[in-house]
Image (tube, rainbow, N blue to C red):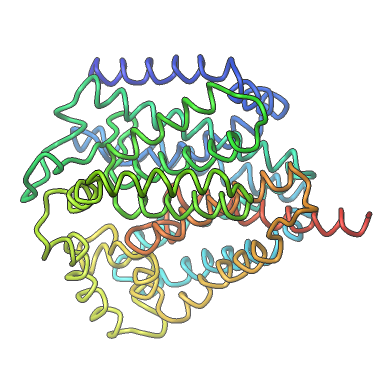
Length: 437
């Protein structure tokens, strides 16, 4: 392993260990220490997405994939035995999780008519493992504190990933911020993580998660907390370095939702005032230049060329619109690992039938979040949890429009499964609280 990668890992780890000794970081640490096994299991589950083939040689890539196979097999066994011991996990997980399970099973079935049977079987098995892990994790959720615990672990994971990107830029800037092809100018940049390997789109989304989760803590905390503020500011810095426009727009939407439904109207007014002053000073033109990212207007309007291959993907979908071409078949037919639109990829690979199954958990979780919008009578802890859950929901949903998310093996699939079971548990807890009152 390159010495710079070791330094990045060590620096990121030490920084996170420092952060969780104080303020909100200490709360995250104490929350995780109460469920040590489950906390480690969740971290391993999420980390498995980084066991890909981004290695210098084919032999190294195959070794990493072998490790991923072992890890996923272990997670599969743990989830199966865990659910057999706690059979109530299925009912507690809710309808959204069951639809995701059906989606994974349909993916396995679709391998039969896929152009690459083995590839489709393996990729759909990856999804099945993640879905089953999400269902299994309902055994650890019994009250509002357990949902906060999951959000706390997500916060720690995002903090580590954000710092890994920051140290990648500081230690090896040429590798972390490579040249952007035809883009030109000082705004033509996008930071990547080197260890673990994280593309710029995910870098920006991870930073957006950290910003949103930290903001809820900052607004909900009556006392000044330097750690919360620091994580928030580090998140903004890495968000700007990542330079993915989709997640930047998503975090703006997330912040507005947090401020509005959290009823932080004074803060909203201050932000609007600062924005108006910034526009007056010419920051609007600078923002436009930043969003264009050194691209021509034509490339910008085509969403960095996405619309061109969306057309090609649509033509492939029309060849088998009902049941698609088999799970992950776009890799064989089009030669792409993703068509950069979650729903179009589902249409290509699993057709209209697969898309309808896939949309059901989204429809379910959307209704649940709307049903539980906080009111003045909502407890502070419940409001904090809802605001964090809805921010995670928005960041995943917006990303799904221009990139891969939870349709196959991806960090967003892990987050989506946690979101589905947490929202379902949150709804049940809120109903229980209302009935007891």
